[in-house]
Image (cartoon, rainbow, N blue to C red; front, side, top):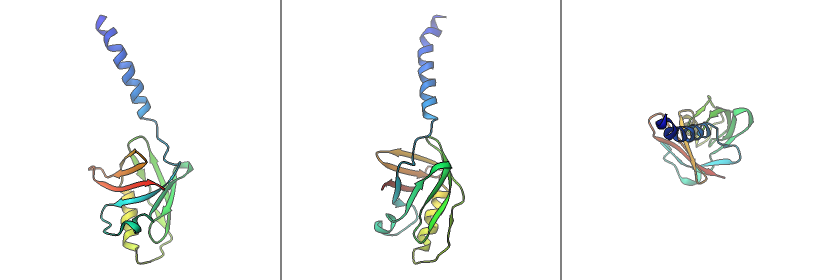
Length: 134
């Protein structure tokens, strides 16, 4: 019984910390703009035009380089999953950038959020997209 009294406070605090970590953080307070994109091979200026906005009801939207896009996203404190993302299919000189950006969003599975930066990772831990608050 003595051991239980020693361990109980640690277990209690651990449960509280775990329950806090399972709550989703609020990403929808801002519009995000891309500062780095894996596989893009383009200028920082063009990357900064790419945006992401989290809306109510797990909807997202933004600008992908040629077109506005829309779709959905579910997330908690560490994991994120984007639905298939849709555009109006207008072609422009940045269509490959758009395809890379949308593909990287759809392939994201985890993220970190710190110091006004949002970083999206794939299942292997590779950085796909880095963003900052606009």
